[in-house]
Image (cartoon, rainbow, N blue to C red):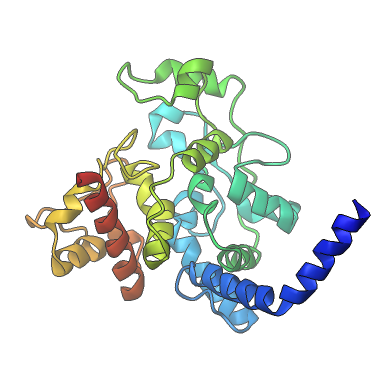
Amino acid sequence: MRVVAMGLLLLLAGCSSHSSDEQARSDAQRAAIAFDGADYKNEAGKVAHGKRLSSLFGCSSCHGPDYSGVNFGEFIPLVQGLWASNISLSMPKLSDAELERLLREGVHPDREIYLMPSKATQFLSQRDMAALIAFLRTIPPAGEPTPLPPKGFEQAVRDRLPKDYWLTEEERKTGSYANAADEVAYFAAHQPADLGPRVARGRLIATSLCSGCHGAALDGVGEPGGDIQGALAYDDATFNKLLTDSIDRTGKRVLVEEWGAGHEFQPLTGAERRDVIAYVRALARSRAQ
């Protein structure tokens, strides 16, 4: 083994320059697969980028303008008893590592959480994630602590589900209501196809943002928005109109019924729209063949 190891060391030494060049290119490619603004140069730019990401992922839409919490049960009776918690008070108790685990894995150090968009934020690049956490750290304390989900919450929600409510195979097997960690696992296992580096950033954007309404694989499974095959009927102008104003090619306004909101609440840059349109079209074409 020592001889083999020495041979490997010599081989690596001879290839070190080539390998380092390849690694640099690989690092640059990974850095490019991020949202616009991830090339921030200072702390102010980092926080500003994180603030934009918090808007894209609806942090204040769920937790309230001052992040002091919202009673979800008041407008979604299905999840009666669930609050989007007061993160202005609870988040300072979490380390950066714990907060990142919450955002990437849906795992809280003390309890299970629900309706957290970890299924989407798990795909963020490291620079995007660092910026989001940096912004969240700037939120000042406000309001009062919010209540935890009541005992038996999962079963109570399961009992209220309509008979035609779509369930994952795991939910059918366990009879439970999916928590954030369950959703992370499902979305990670059902990503839309990787169609190569040319559309890699579009895939990131579609996987992290579009999947919330069009399903983890953008095939419409389990979500109200349906699949993305209709993308092939849009030209550039009508596609951009859809993504900026939520107006489809027939002139109809498209909204997410539960939230009364559309694409304009997740404003993408022109370059981001271009990239996600390219990916969604490529995906739709590959599925149409």
